Image 1: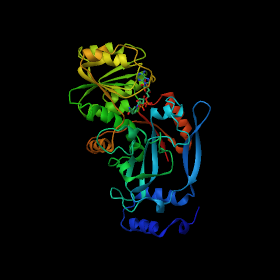
Image 2: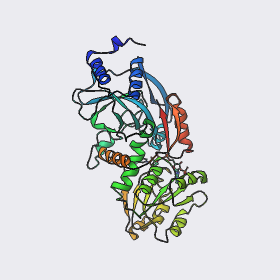
Image 3: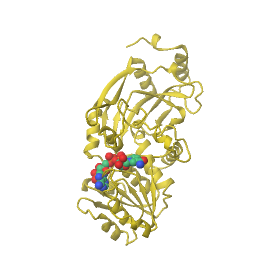
Length: 380
Ligand SMILES: NC(=O)c1ccc[n+]([C@@H]2O[C@H](COP(=O)([O-])OP(=O)(O)OC[C@H]3O[C@@H](n4cnc5c(N)ncnc54)[C@H](OP(=O)(O)O)[C@@H]3O)[C@@H](O)[C@H]2O)c1
């Protein structure tokens, strides 16, 4: 362990003392500080290219120095990370994207250890999550944002410490653990944007969510809190039972009933659902089109069945006056609006399983096995 006198610059030690004296350093922050001061090197996982895809490789690198922060930057001790299907896409090279040497995972939460001289939004000890698109603060999407996504073109969250511009961070919901908050940046924001900002979901409407992964379970939970009726499909009766316990109104096993839109159609009194949270892609799109109500909305989100084109006629979209809405996560404003909602509503994120940082490859294998219900978390 490196002696504190070497690690601490005068500004850093003054900041630290100030926060202890003012009582703004709480217990978990002390834990992060202790971790920071006890480490010469910090840990991280990176993707390393192999012949067909990527290996997950553990590395160490020097702990970032608070004294090197730019004026608007914050040093964050990462305390929990969650995985998304997208991490499997990068890991298995399913989208042909070059992520060699990049730190995986867009989603994580932690606490701020130090701030640059011009940081006004946060102070040390604040509990934060990073935005999926660190540069998309508000307003319309721009293709430039796609060039700067965490766990893709930019290093992600699977590391002990990370430095972010203050504009790339949001406060996590009050009273949420880091593990809970780590589930939010991709899956929850996507579900929120799909149903609330873009979908304008109203009480009494109906929603269909496909499968029981991260996006779909958040969509189920938001929809129930907003007074909607929800249909859930899954390959597993046990998972459907869990969805029922979260309020699902109609459950369909899509393996037993491949034409599940018929079951949904009958359940809905031949009306269809007002919103479909379409995470399946080409293999599910026909059933989604057959499930949506006249004047309804399909949020086009995922590629669980691949990146190919739809195989069915798109005519039902016209015939039913359907609004087809491509969704790509959301902005910082979306994230903050969602946190506001979570601060005033009771929602418990569904964490299926937690892994330790050194078990990261096992966590990826578990994601790939698709045994999870909701989210998978890695704790640091
Ligand atoms: N556009 C965006 O902004 C955005 C954001 C987040 C995610 N996504 C995409 O959305 C999709 C879901 O992501 P995620 O992280 O929520 O995934 P995830 O947590 O890995 O979800 C996996 C689950 O999907 C379900 N599934 C697989 N094939 C299915 C099928 N044919 N029909 C219905 N359900 C099926 C399975 O549920 P059961 O075990 O219950 O059958 C599986 O357990 C992915 O394609 C991801 O890339 C896009």
